[in-house]
Image (cartoon, helix red, strand yellow):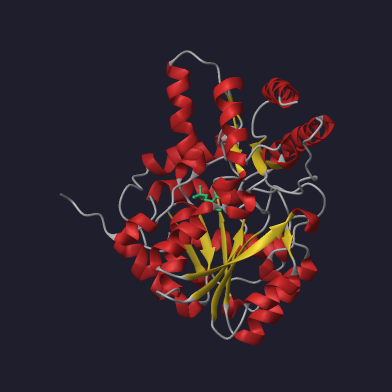
Length: 388
Ligand SMILES: Cc1ncc(COP(=O)(O)O)c(C=O)c1O
């Protein structure tokens, strides 16, 4: 009988993919499910990006490339930081990976040994906790609080960090809450990183999907020698299936990333990287249009949810998620999610799919049409009314 290694048992999964399996089963029984569980834009990848990729294929860019990504793409990513944030990045500090997700794994493998102390946000994107558990890290959870706009309480962070802290993970703008960490909190984090000498891994994959004001990258204020920034093409350019992401990494760590990349995937897919250059350097109208549309939907969801007795949410400032407080319904997040899916045929994610502090919440992705959102919110309203 095959014995699965303990480390694999410690790996988690991702709620969105698990729910999709359940949804597919229901759909095969003829049920019409409204999908609000998906973490990807409902827009197509812009044509100019596809065209650049076809061209690369026709030109025979079909072989292995540099394991850290082709130089032209790494340069385009470095320029992105100059253009958007006024920060100078050397292309040698850029690592292109197979989706942002591969670089979460690689970052944790590069920095964290068994028993090392790591501070991880909660609720948060599940891959962080999963991979940290896999390597046997000593995880300290940093509670992201609705009362703080889903930022953290700086005193709680101060209580958690010590000389033993190896790494602090943050995500900004956030999945699942739509929250943005204010610049003052980022400055405090950067000061603590200097004081104690820990690395900060700041996942900024939603940096272009913001609604209120200009986004502040952690790279603008931090010491680059202790900072890893994650970003990618999936969300901004509706390229989730392309599996391309990048990280800005301290120079001395780049060879470690390279070694891990070579062992896992050799290099990111070569011809797709040419499309990614076009994404960054070509026209940005499609990004602006998408964000404008998301903003309309965000406002719609916010207004509808807050009109439903027993539900509430704060205004999301970025990403395309609403983190809805359901605690007054007296259902657990999982009960709410299951009732909504099986009885009302609306798929969302339970807040606990993002960690223990997600209890009392559900996550709605508003990356779908207003018509779908309207129908889904009617069903949610009916369900909550039925609870009386
Ligand atoms: C916060 C966050 N980080 C990273 C990722 C990974 O994205 P990808 O692997 O598609 O680049 C996601 C995807 O949902 C995310 O929400």
